[in-house]
Image 1: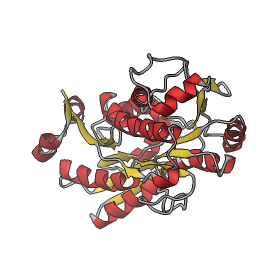
Image 2: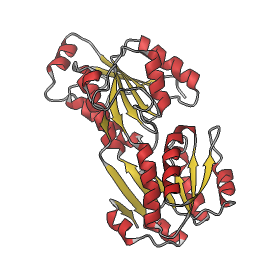
Image 3: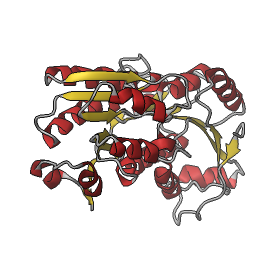
Image 4: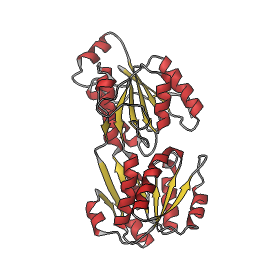
Length: 329
């Protein structure tokens, strides 16, 4: 893994530039964004990255012409992540983007209390963690968007019970980065009187074959796989192992269903990337983070794979099929 990368030039200049952007270009200044996190090249979220660049282009910022984006990806080694983010902050970036698990924002905050930070909070609540004062008045140098993964985890449990009425044994796969999701999912499962089999994964990369062997010992009737960047590259294998055990699955991203998972309910990565781009552009054009309310994700999608349903021998409820935004047959 390279220590840092510059994202190459993509696309042309916007036809009409804001005054600030024109001034920067005429003065020969390159706007610089420091991007902390794995969303740029994570196979789940990366397809949405062009929307981030497109939103910046609309505001007059084009990579390779008047904009440079520097990326720190490593999140598994926290010490390295913090060191590289601090180094990036010292190189005079104009904005830091902290997109992903809480550790990305922790690294950005540790690197600078003055550089504007745009967060994309995934898997944690930035208010509960004390990073911002409130959604409407974040205060300080941080603003951005929240994906509501914790609330979505509870909703996913509810949708599973609606899709598969009568099933009462739920297994949940999670790790340290999805701990807050697990808390909400388990609470919802208990309120629905489900028996919960918890499997916390330790020390990535994870051995999913061994995990599923352990999982089968509890004879679960449903499986909820929570959101972690350490799961993404194994989504096809996770789906395959679940099908082998004829186990209905629920995920947060549609790409898991496209890889053979049964159901997903969660955010649209492109919509969230676009919002991040909009916030970065506003700050580059002079806005202060404290004056920009934190936004919550508003676009969610429900996907169902009927081919997988047939393979594992389950009939999904009509209500779920009617609500699905995408049905794979």
